Image 1 (cartoon, rainbow, N blue to C red):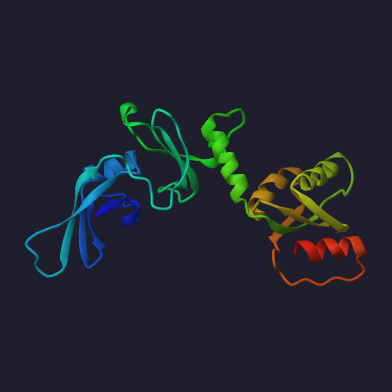
Image 2: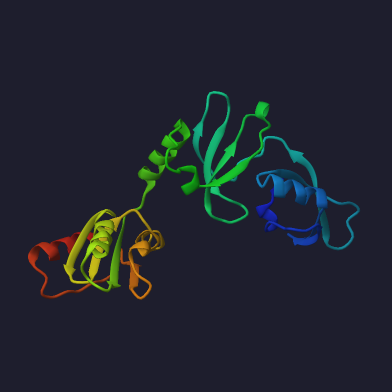
Length: 229
């Protein structure tokens, strides 16, 4: 059996840790390898003789830096480099795992998706990730409400344009919008908060599938709500 860093909750120090039906010993060298290469795997070894609870240790490092089980291949180049969509074992955030070919050292690295897709990059691996994300994007319905002062002028116009750019939108109430898009409330908040002042307020809530009721809305507005919530 192979053991990854995440299997041991990303331990930061050498020592004995609870594991399965006993304990496992992790050395300074193994921790150092994981901190340098979070994707490294080791063989699981059981110590002998067995006295009471089982005692385990890590054996030799597995060559090839196996990808996590939930990793999704993005792109493989002709020279053997691979890029996978997975999670950074240190932060838990979604990230791209790059594994160079063995001739280049095979050193696994992780990079946040936004940084990987930063403006100006357009290699085949970046294009493949964009297509993958577009294909798997989950459309959600999000309510956006705000208290902005003043409700006119260039800053207010910039805010409304930013909301409209998110996707299909509904705006039949003065300070409320409903948008259908592939972004999370946190992402929308981060995109819009640069358009509000220090005394303004902004609320973003996902309402996909919620039970809703309304009155006084015209037929066009009512149909949009029925079709999108």
